[in-house]
Image (tube, rainbow, N blue to C red; front, side):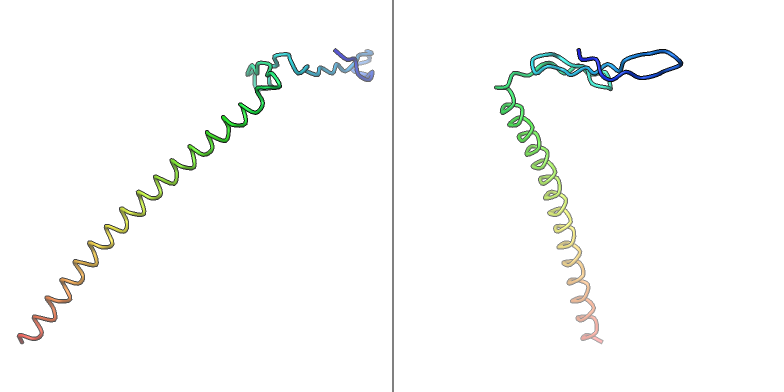
Length: 97
């Protein structure tokens, strides 16, 4: 623990306490979550894990978007087929009159 600069608070002399976690100490974040100490050799593994999670997330989003695009394309193809049949029926009806 490092004692920082002195400060004045409510007419009392106090010290600001600076706590700097050591590389091999567990720490608690401001939101109360415990972050265990990480070995220096774990850093590449953590990076690989984060990249894998990111790629999985992107792959999932891409698959979902692809499925939606193909569904829309199928719907549009069906509507075009119906439109084509309607136009043909209308043209056939006009020719018979």
